[in-house]
Length: 384
Ligand SMILES: NC(=O)C1=CN([C@@H]2O[C@H](COP(=O)(O)OP(=O)(O)OC[C@H]3O[C@@H](n4cnc5c(N)ncnc54)[C@H](OP(=O)(O)O)[C@@H]3O)[C@@H](O)[C@H]2O)C=CC1
Ligand SMILES: CC(=O)[C@@H](O)[C@H](O)COP(=O)(O)O
Ligand SMILES: [Mn+2]
Picture 1 (cartoon, helix red, strand yellow):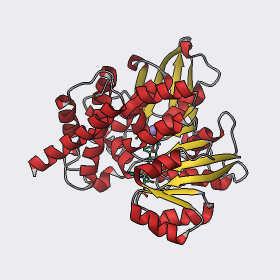
Picture 2 (tube, protein in one colour; picture 1 turned 180 degrees about the vertical axis):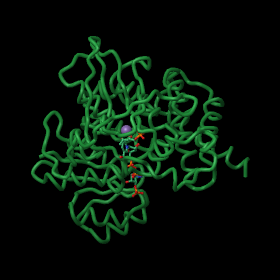
Picture 3 (cartoon, helix red, strand yellow; picture 1 turned 180 degrees about the horizontal axis):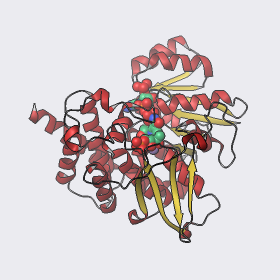
């Protein structure tokens, strides 16, 4: 029996993690979870899974639930997230919150020796050096949940890192993969949220459409697999059947395939190095699929991908700024305050304005994150 702390239980990854726990009650128990503002779903999760510890984003919501469930320990805000991440009984922490708010609790969970199942890529983009150093120092396993990284992790089982030629991260192209830059000028939020292959939270769906998601994933892969950016490539693959590949020195390529279903990589992170059946997963019928398509990535068309490679290569505090500016810009787009192509303009301005810090500590990272958000907000105020 593995005891699980789930950060972000009410989101897309969180709900699918609960599906896995529900399917395997003999293997997993939900010990603690956090939610943001969705108290209705949090209430249902408590009733079904009877966890020991729950945290809500807001104090009012935590107090309401405390009155309804007096037997459960309730907390809120940053302290609550820390409480979930470090909950004594838990063996594994699934980080499924969205954004760099996931960084501090991840570091705290690592300091307590918890295994981390990481969906929250912003954590590694914001402070990959701190997270990887802490994991190494504490002997903690960081298991990828992101589908591409899970694919690479699976392809690397039994392989030696020295034999890797390069990683090939696949990209669906997102909601606007067939539109020119000219056609992107007037796209709506609704159009952008219509991902062709995956049903995901709003922020990552917009990141897929701008291709920032792939940029964040390149940086995530750099940290998880300890490879230079020159060895990490991106390939457009519209079907999202091959979730990523590893090419070795001898020219062999190992790929992981499957229907686009996040429950597969989530479950693999929870069962690793073992596997369990997954009754709900749709099996691939390759004969029915017939053909798979691949295409070179266009860095002019997808400027955010170029920003991410450049920020990752330069390192220091720049990836922190890339991520924070992106979070602020995507939130503004989702609020209807800016147009789609302005997301990349805001990020570019924040990157240009940032005064670089070579090897930032946690306080400097948190400050750079805050400053980048404030910078984007100041630009938004000026333009209104
Ligand atoms: N969805 C997917 O298929 C994939 C997602 N990922 C990554 O996984 C992470 C989660 O994505 P996804 O599940 O789509 O996101 P969602 O937006 O669906 O869910 C986010 C979760 O985080 C909670 N949350 C949001 N802000 C805060 C906050 N400030 N404090 C505490 N909790 C908060 C939300 O609570 P509430 O809803 O209650 O407000 C919700 O539970 C992201 O980093 C994403 O990039 C990676 C690969 C695939
Ligand atoms: C499911 C998952 O891991 C997402 O990150 C997904 O990869 C998004 O798809 P694209 O970014 O390739 O459009
Ligand atoms: Mn992914």
